[in-house]
Length: 254
Image (cartoon, rainbow, N blue to C red; front, side, top):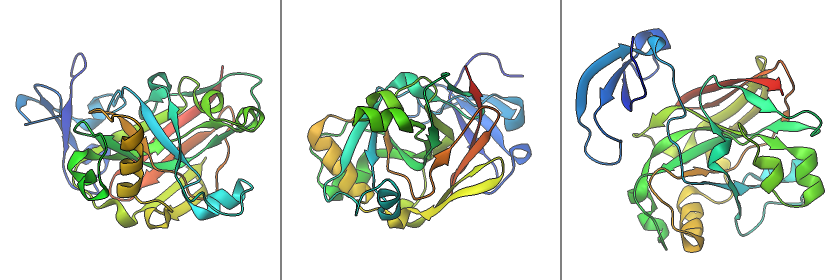
């Protein structure tokens, strides 16, 4: 069994189950040339942590037309609406989403997440993909009643454990038209495609990089399709993105 914490590369068939996959440890971080340590384990024998610990999570609101409408808007904003989630909200595959008692309705939001690989500032859209390390699955957990009461996003989206990401980072992927969905206790809640984004990935990251410097490891949440809904104590929520995999987290009330 592996001991301690290490970066690794998941190996095996693209659509393989956990039992078919292995993890090969690397000697350093994934931002640069990969060197293997020689250690290798069955994936089912390791615990998957959040695949990255970002300096910040930059998210975008109402980036799918149907979701904008279900939130009470006539249409999605013409300019991206961005907000930050703290790094302390990040958890990994299988970790508990912990809902503080008494905060009202809490929703899941299935999202394609982007991991930045190189410092990015004032990028033009045609240069964006040069600065991306890869892609993972995100769940922008939201205290909906608090978001509406505050008329801004910080408190409602910033609680510890309100940003599950995982199960790993996929570095070879065309993100332009992927299925994205969410289930709660096996029942389908969200069912969309990344091609339905109002502002695509080059536009989003170019816009964000004009506001702030994006650093290696930063995570970009690209918005959620329609179908967001409540999660409560005892639920299990699974978010999936085609070509990456599934991110499953149980829900508990503190």
